[in-house]
Image 1 (cartoon, rainbow, N blue to C red):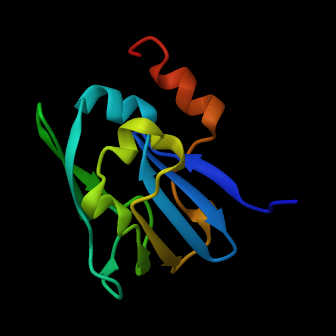
Image 2: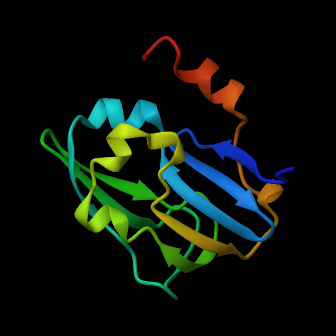
Length: 126
């Protein structure tokens, strides 16, 4: 049985927490708004980011979008597959993570919402 839990931000990121590691990606809503994704800028492993920092840029045929750090933490892994296949985000955004970070603080200390709360916020826009 998995002990992971998924949270969402108002900026359209999702955070899947497993122990003290958080996997971070963008939501299906975000990828639909961006359109066909052609490039993902990956952060460097061992980089440290604070809440609100830009940690990645996702470029589509329509626009480039900064991706904001939803937590404080140190990058422990990046999804290298996105370098060659950024379209993986379009194919399965809610399961395609950009990076994994070691959390500096408890996940409960951040302003995150559940999936049902996230859907309620954006269902009228989708």
